[in-house]
Image (cartoon, rainbow, N blue to C red; front, top):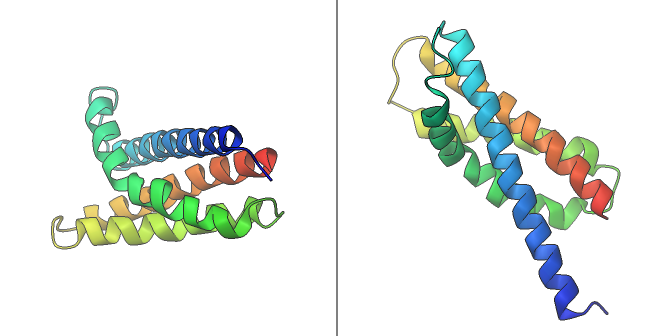
Length: 133
């Protein structure tokens, strides 16, 4: 039986993982959007991209990943399961957030950025969780 202090330290660890995974997804998505739209001032949009990317990534990194951890913690499937959940979750989240807000060819760019951001953060989260268990 685990003590209360051990459980609290586990929760802090999972919260920290979610926070770092959110930043990874936001950075990845920001750079993909900046590079694919031809933005020469990618560094100038970094603070805004981190803010918006974190808002878009939070449902996946702070919602889906901890729920997935309940099923995959300590298993080798976590290495491949989290990137898959991040890829699909990032695509669905961005599609739902951007539906009807962006016209033209920019919509698929944002969905692809969500997919790649979810994939990158899923790789990090799955590997860190596997090392933890």
